[in-house]
Structure formats: C-alpha cells, structure tokens
Image (cartoon, rainbow, N blue to C red; front, side, top):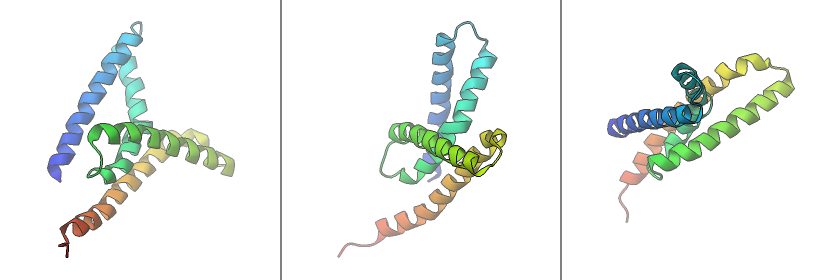
Length: 127
C-alpha cells in the first residue's frame, strides 16, 4: 500500500513539473513564480481533491486514468457545491479554501473506508 502511495506522489510531482514547464512555454512573458502560483492553485482547487476521491479506485485504474478522471471529478464537485452553497447564501469568498479541504477529507475517508472492504473481499477464497 505504501509503495503505491509513494509511486503516486512521485507521479504527482512529475505531472506538476511537466505542467509548470508547459504553462511556462505558453505564458512565456510571465515569471516562473506567476506560473507556479497558477498551477498550484489549479492543483489545490481541482486536481488534489479529485485525485483523492478517485484514489479508492487504485486497483481498477492506472495512475493516468485516475489523474485525468480525478481532474474532471474535482472540477465537477467544486463547481456544483460552490453553486449550491452560493444559492444557500454561504459566502463565496471562502469557497477556494474550504471546499477543496472538504473534498480532501472526503477522499481520504473514502479511501480508508473502501480499502479494508476491497482487500477483505479479494482475500476470500472462491468455492
């Protein structure tokens, strides 16, 4: 289990670095610090929460698929929850911090709850 977490962290750092380089090539007039802030914000808002929610499916999908689907899941979760919280009257200025943190906790909780069930079901002998 820890091997896959370290592999995922290594792959996360590699994808972050590639994304910073590609973004710097596109926005060549901006400083590296501006690009780092932009990509870090993108990762905080969408990538990390979506990937942690998709972490429960690590036995079914590879890192690349979980990473790409996780970005879509993170964007959808953040957008829908932010929209409905705004309709309920919750201050929108705090969504950038509270919603990704909430989805990180949900993703870790799903991983902790689903992993023991998945390993228990895979270890049962077939009759």
